[in-house]
Length: 98
Image 1: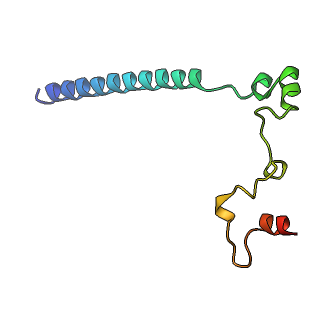
Image 2: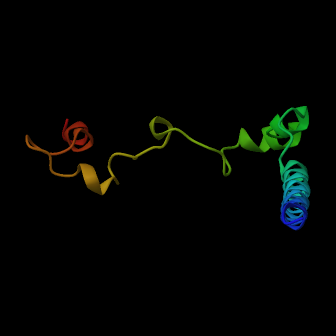
């Protein structure tokens, strides 16, 4: 008769652990669903569209678009980090001297 109360105690403990595990699995599933809903769908073609035709026309005017350093007039002349090289200054200064 001593074994019956101990097995019922073990069964109750196992049942409590199984319920706790089931609750944790439900929470994990809910968290995954929330994360999936918050993820950005990168397969959409609309996501990869940069601009419209109207925006392309204004970009041709160089108004606020991305420009390369080579396209900017006087870029090296205003660059403070390149002033005063070892042999006679920057290449922009040398070009002006010629």
